[in-house]
View 1: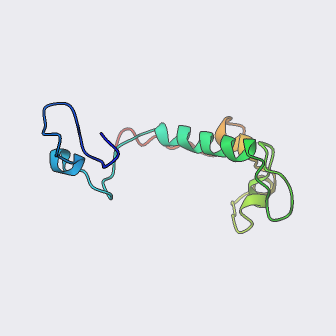
View 2: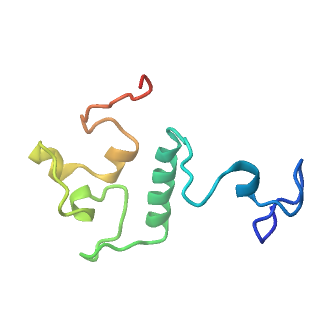
Length: 105
């Protein structure tokens, strides 16, 4: 695809756009499955690497509490609500949250 969003090779005319060939458009939803977890982890890593600062002046890191990022965020368990951090959500299963497998749906 060139800079104008037109396909320039393959079985289609060089004047065809992706939407003409595939039916895709700016609101097309793609089934990316569990890859969204990778996007989330990479996004958080980039925010940390870029030195993102929270409103309270604290630099974002993997030990930052979720409550410091999202003050209105609540859980049923008050202990977990105050102690859950980014590492818990991204990489470990020490949070004790129930994992729901939707692959059977």
